[in-house]
Length: 303
Length: 252
Image 1 (cartoon, one colour):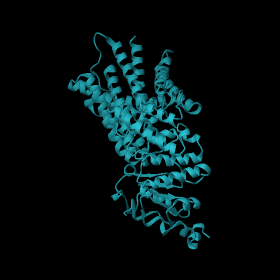
Image 2 (tube, chains in turn green, purple):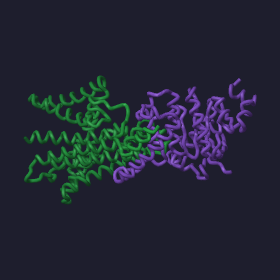
Image 3 (cartoon, chains in turn red, green):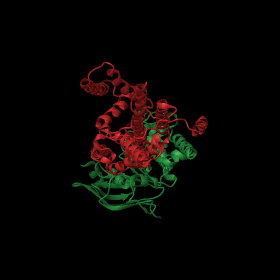
Image 4 (spheres, each protein chain N blue to C red):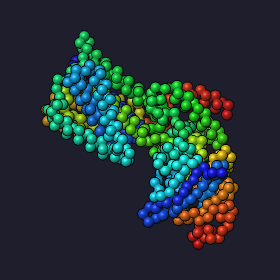
């Protein structure tokens, strides 16, 4: 049963990661693949705060989210002031640099990893309660991103993605929108990191590298960018698929490369055959109905 | 009467190509100024300099007496500077209506704090902007296509959407970059009427246009530009009939 719980928790965490990454790269059009480093920052901050300073786990998870949010803003502000393209380079540099740094920083476990992270299991309810907690938070994340992208802020992101110059000329501050969305997405990833840390209770720097970047990117691309359910489906499919082949009892020397092949194969397949992903996004942004729409229909009826 | 928009000593060159050579220009409230000149004269570049899209080598711009130099493009827009683009630059992923909804100087969701913590204020703001957009769409005859995608409507209508979007700013100064290129018939008349109405409401307007009939019908005054310089300023008739300028324009 623990195996199933672990898979469900991983699915929940990757739904959070993929959805928040889609907010950044899909909805806002910010080219960055360093999303896992903010997941890592959240995980390490939360782990350290609870382990070393005895902070209650929920508080330390929140602090991890805030830490990831602030760190992402630190990367984004200078990069985006130059141009959008620099964000890709700056964020990858930040990701790889920080991983190397973490490997040599023994206070947080170094390359060997951080162990004995306090767990966040409520004793009488067991692991089931943690599964429920993660899945509920995943659902809330999806709903929050849907709410944000279908409201007036989503209209801004869409316009900015279409034409940044025209967007600025209307009086909208493109840099601020980018930094804000990048920070929100990264902050959500940071919270997911905390949830990861207190369940698996072990963190090592290498697990947050480019391999995980490509995994999250694949989930978003395969599922369908700029859709509510695309990243969810992508996360589920790509979490389950590698699990399926573990049932074939293959030796680890074959299993690892095979999973890598599967990932790469899927990306290639989707790029050629279905670049829009399993769930294609609509061509036209349509916001949710607002109360103001009542005034609209009255006025339209008159005209 | 002081000018709404004041350009002083504007200079800009890209490598060896001079696009603005100490340009002084005043735009007056309620007046339409036509910028005339051959391709490459620096007309659109002047717009880009005024809007802060391109940084000048020297010179200053001020709107209603307030200097714009240190301000980025979006802040200039918030002060009441609006423009349209030669190549439209509409948002293809948004409907006509939503293109307009982004146009007010203060947008409902400019502040994230409002988005998260003041939903009622956002709703009020959105409703107000929507009413204004509907009003402008009605005046420009675009109401029937308010919810269409911008790539599904005719080129002339797209031009009109560009003008309508700029109107959402309630600008003090409006720069129109070739609003008539590729436009004819009913849309032509609609754009003409729209520009007249805006000017009548006290907005300073500057139009770059190759359509001589349009310039003649609409502009109170014209400026002839060539190689980044203002060569002449006067009535449109005067400029058109100047044999020297005609020669420069057609390059004969």
